Image (cartoon, rainbow, N blue to C red; front, top):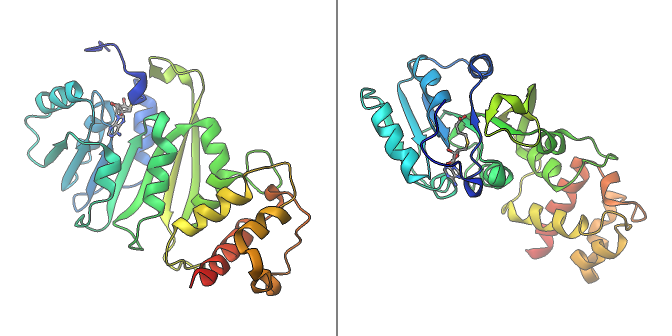
Length: 268
Ligand code: SAH
């Protein structure tokens, strides 16, 4: 594949060139003629082109790079059911009037992949406008998303991701499948919104606050940081039977959700 320009690190540009992998990505979810598909960061349109062969009702491609945006416009000039948008996806996600049940694909720009995922999780409206997310991450990030507690990889990203999403790991992808070749391998994950969110929060930011404070020092026991969050209102935590002499990675996802709901109660 010939590149138009030097690939931009600042935009996390690593283009997928392995046709087998592209085909495997498309097998993860069935796209049919009723579906609207959104692709994040279409680049030179390798994955985009494969998506068009599934003939979705509508395909929205978002690309921040102006040059690549023009390239995509030329490349797909004949596809009438396609909308190419030159915008930062982080702005796009916040939009209010997106239609329902969108299937989202993204070989994500690695420098903002966790930001993109977090903003899709913390949307005000739930269930959200998407029915499934199919995302490529650096393997190390995917490992953090999938981690079990009491492991090194377990952390804020694990807790947040599992709060509202069912996560499936599909396969690892060699760094040789991209140009320019990144330093590390990748992993393909998919996410489906949980319909009944047992741990309801008025403001998802409160879960982010709780995990930020509690994971601020992985090596220390949580007692000081819990007191920081709840100050004089520690009694509110009584029925959680929380052991304060443990490290943050020892708590389960559910315990974090419970702490966050109590924290929210405290705020009134
Ligand atoms: N999907 C393509 C490209 C993946 S690289 C492929 O598989 O080959 C990531 C792409 O995301 C690049 O094209 C990059 O320009 C684009 N990108 C980076 N930051 C973005 C942002 N904030 N919003 C939208 N697109 C972005």
